[in-house]
Image 1 (cartoon, rainbow, N blue to C red):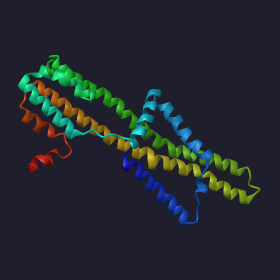
Image 2 (cartoon, one colour):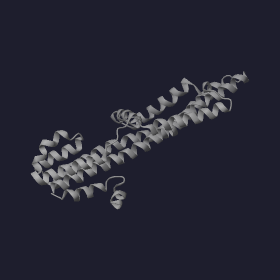
Image 3 (tube, rainbow, N blue to C red):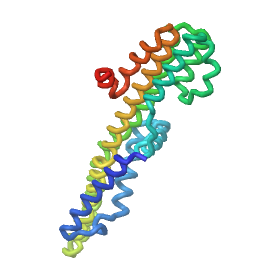
Image 4 (cartoon, helix red, strand yellow):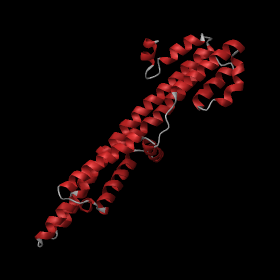
Length: 255
């Protein structure tokens, strides 16, 4: 679980609702099913017009990844590549064929398979870089959908508020009901602003950060495979790949 995402939403909602209740309000005052239907349904509908269906379906998986995320162990990957480099230098790159089953990352496994099959380093780089670019384009679409939702939601909330006010204006003969109706009408605006600023936009930003981290790991794998194929010294490969780690520069300086 991503503690920061879950804890952040709980903290934000707790602070907002807690402050409201301290001022004499109640959760029931902002619990309006109709307003939620307008904002959520309208936002999803607007995103459906802008993006293809397969992108929207991928976005739902991306939303789950905001709260459930298994990070990549860059250090373990680096050490594995260095081990492969040592073995390839001693026994030849073909000897790595026996170790392919132990490689769990499909991207790294594909690169090593190409290397073992005798593919030229330039061709391996082209193939792996193309794989990175294609997957990167797909992964970038999920934050784009969430950013669009963050832009649509407040406006959809205003539409809900206006619809509520239209209903209120039909009962101007009862001034007490008018006051209550106006309060209820603006709940949709709250939902729209909250959906955009407490979830959609922050989630999009987090997924962008994770996407960059994933790209960095794949670039490290790419350089590792090419370096093995070109027969570089394992120590040089290790030093080279450490530059891709978040604390790589600091670690090198300390060493």
